[in-house]
Length: 157
Picture 1 (cartoon, rainbow, N blue to C red):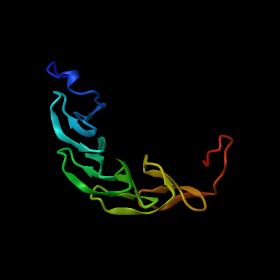
Picture 2: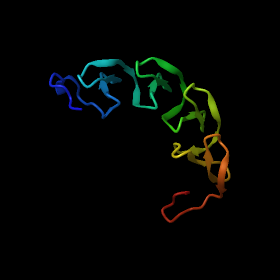
Picture 3: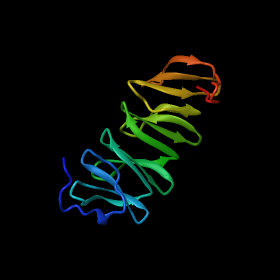
Picture 4: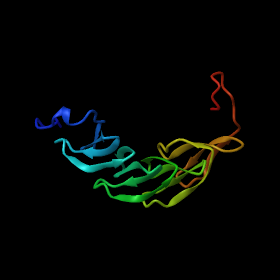
């Protein structure tokens, strides 16, 4: 879909990619969302804003991360020190210094027991624990576990 002719690029200094008909835009050091006509559809009131993924977008408000719906309403309170986009029905969140996962209702479905975690992909997620690494399923059960192994590049994977 082409951007409408009345969309003026000078209205915004930058706009990020359109996802599901909306793009994130910075306005006076805050982020909001515009539609393909260049109209603001979610007011620029967020310190950071991610793209909508699985109908929710991760946003940062007053130093904490939460999630808004496509109307811009905060549906999962900004209570996490870090959060990432939803993938496979789970969003990675950091509580304190450890990572866990929430569902679309904001409920913690995998406890924050991990020192590191990737996003879910095809039902699996790479995680790092105090004594090793592994892959968990969407229920948080390990399907493979192993020790840390240092590679030539210095990575722990």
